[in-house]
Every structure is written in C-alpha cells, then in structure tokens.
Picture (cartoon, helix red, strand yellow):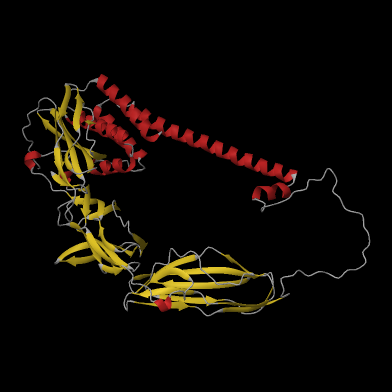
Length: 565
C-alpha cells in the first residue's frame, strides 16, 4: 500500500513574484526571468511592462497543483529569456496579472550587467564550457592560421547557435562540418563539439578578437523535490529532463599581425599579377599547342593551388599582343583540407582569339609569393604560351580580283515585311514567339488551365478534410457531461491532433509536444492555462457546475479549432 502525505497549504489571495538567474552577469549572458503566480486557476497570463534594455523571448510555462481538504490551489510559472542590449544597471520588466480577485503586480528587478565577460560567464557551470585555440597568434598579413572552438558538455545539447562570432578584419574559410566525439578532460568524461575556421588577416597590427558567444538549448536532469512539497503534476516527481537555455562565452584573444616586408628591387616588375600570395603556391598551365585559324579561339587553362588567400583573385593578367583578343570565363573554386590547412584550388579558363595570322608568343603567367617560413619573396611563373596562327599576316583586308559582273535587279523587301535589326541575343520569350504555332500555343494554354483547375480542387478537398477534422474534434467535447470526461476527451483529441494514434499524450510528454508543435506563443499560453483549469477542477473535489462545464466545453472547442483548423 502506498500512502501519499500531502502538505498543509494555506490558501489565500492570488500572489505574484519574480525570480532572475543569474543575479548579475555580462552583456553576453542570457538571464532567465521567471514569473510565479500562486492562487486561483483562473488567473490570466502575465502582462510584462517596461524592460526595454533587454531582448525578451518566451521560453515556456509549467504549473503545479496543490490540493488540501478538497480545495485546489495552482502555482503557474512563466519563463522568459532576457538578453541585455547594453551594460550597466538594467531593470527587468514589471509584471501585472489579472485574477478574479483583482490585479496583482510585481516590481522590476535591477540587474548589474558588465561589458566584458569572463570565460563561460554565461552559465558558471563546470558541466558545460567553451574553449578556443589558435594554431598561431603571431602571423603575417594574409597568412593562414586556424582557430578551433571546442564545446565541452556533460549535458545533451539539443541546439546551438553562434550569436556573436565576428571576424571583421579577417577573411574566413570553413574547414569542415562540426565534429562530435567523447573525450576525457581533466579526468572527467565530456562530449566535445568542435568547429574550425581558417583565418587570413586583412591588415597588419594587433587585432583583438571578441569572445565567441554560443547560445545552447541543453537537456538537464531535474532533481525531485522532497515529499514535504509533493506536487501531483510536477514533472520533477517523475525525474524527467528539462530543456534549458545556456550561453557559454570564450575568452577574447589578441592576434599580432606582422606587415609584409618590402619587395626586393630585383623582383619588382617581374610578375604580371599584383596580388601577393602569402603561403605555398602551385601553378600549372594547360593548352593545345597546335596551330589554329585566325579568328578562332585557343583555350588556355591556368590552375592555382595555394594555402594563401587567393579568393580575391578573380582575373589574371596576360601580356598578349594587341591583335590577340582575350575572353575570360568566371573562375572555378574548390577547397580541400591538407595537413590541417585549407587549400584553395582556383581554375581560370581564357580564350585567345588572334585577328591575323602569324606566331603568337605570350610570357608565362606569373605571381609574387611570400613564404612566411623563410620570410622571403619569390616569383612563380608558368611556361610561355606559344602557338601558330594560319591566315593572312597583314592587317589589311583581302580584296578580291575584279571580274565582269552581271547586272541583277536589286532585291528589296516588300512593305509588308518587318525588318528586325538585332543588337542583342533573343531571349527565351522571343524565341518561343517565333517558333510556336497557334495550335501549339492553344494546346499549352489548355494544359496550364488544367493544372490550375486540378490545384484548385485539391485545395478545396484539403480544406474540406481539415474542416471535417476540426468538426469531429469539437463535436466529441459537447458529449462530455463531467469535468473528468471533458478533460479526458480533450486530451485524446489533442493527442490525435498532434498525430499520436494511441491518444496517450499526458504529463511531461504532452508538455514537450505542446512546445514542439504549438509555435504561436499566444495559442500556447491559452492551451496551457486551459489544461491547468481542467486539472484544478478535475482533481480539486469541488462540486461540478454545469454552467462552468458548458463554458469549458465551448472554450475547448475554440482552442481545438485554433490549433487544427
């Protein structure tokens, strides 16, 4: 036999108070702002006033029912996440709650918010923290180095977003997708989430990297309260996990960026492209050396493969003769990871079109490279580009020999013909207008009308089906003669609407499903307050009032219609 010892509860007027956690922190923290309403089940949702110094996000609500001598009292908790917009002594929102007994209020709470965070100040929890490492903190301008962010957690991480990951004075390349593995840190097992980026400094000087801020949704095991405060519908009693928001912050960091040394005099003017590549570079040239006719194109392919930042290099400079025209395609880029560094491979395709015959000779494509290891410059150059062009060598046009000609009547267009002088390529609509016959156009129009008609009837069928589901859900509530029956029918229809075929959504599972499926905050609060009212009346032992039951049936039908119609 199990005996449940219920505590003595003193029921009184409705009361509201607020809790803030943590009590102080930094501008990078997220503060949990809880509004606790104690008293009657029919109290409304809290109205927040002020709090303009924070960005506010509704996180969810929960309720606990206490029963004493057949009377029920409910404690409702509404949780919000507050993110500071600035530093200083900031005021949280004030609270007003309308109850049948009148309006109750809670004053704002003052929070001290600092500008500069300490590492992991967002949670002060050794079970979850963020670390940042660098492959080097002293590099040359344009030299690649690696930054690694590691999240260590003993909780299950549901979701995480980098809120303030800034690299304003760097070019950033992603190395790979985030990785997850199991490790031991200082003898304690953790799950480690790791993400890496390759950074290229865009200017010299000492650059301060701001802290990396990671906002997380984590599942934490809840501790059950003692039986001296037993709550029948408290999920803590069954030791469920709770979904909580954490913000972890890394330390800020300083990177010393050295300027590139002056270019030696003997190298100046020996390269065609001005972009200095810092790091390793392999360059290759490919083309067909056979001769071509004048006026035709010769395709040249130049491929660069480098650990340096060659992303800004969008075109190549060639010292071509004035009578050779150059047409360049958009370069193609690929990235790979080699020995822990990002390697960018960029392919340039150009077409060289000579306007006359003769021998074409073009110097190789050249680049200036700085090697950070040897701290020296060098010029990387391909072999020259050479090929023959057949056809007339002079710039003069070929004049045909004179011959007797037969006079022919001039050909003129009739007035009905429309002469089109095209100065651009035809677009698709113009091509279709010339090519499609009248009968084919009518056939296409009939096909379009058929598709639109099918889509319209499908929408009507879907709307009728949804309306039928809504009618079925609300109709069954009208057959409930008692509060308990109404509660059971409503929970079954709610489970069915959420796609649960066994209709068994209850307790914590139902709360999680509501958070997942009901994205509109107003609908979610209305639904949770309605469920709280049903629970309080069903288990409070009060005499059932048919007027109240009728009102709850109507309210439940309206809620189901809002959610599932």
